[in-house]
Amino acid sequence: MAEPEVEAAWRAEFRRIPETEVFDSGPDDAKEAFRWSGDEAEARRLQQEHAHHYLRWTFVGACAAMIVGLIGVGLSFSD
Image (cartoon, rainbow, N blue to C red):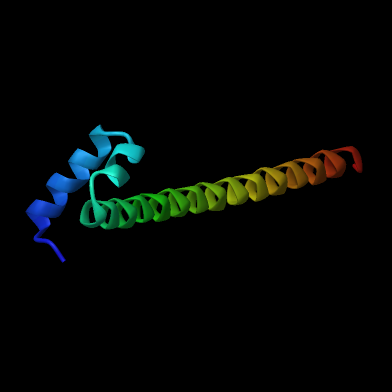
């Protein structure tokens, strides 16, 4: 495994050039590019999972607020 500074430089370089050029440059660079793209995909997946989690709970909270409001309106007409 490369040192953190070297790996950071590689990641910056991989962001600048198209993925197809990285795989044409050689086997060692391709392995690192593949590992980096996997890291990026995992980070993207976790971010989407987090967003879905918050969206789900926001929806549940909105539904609960609507139900409580309907109950309140129903109780106000019962008197």
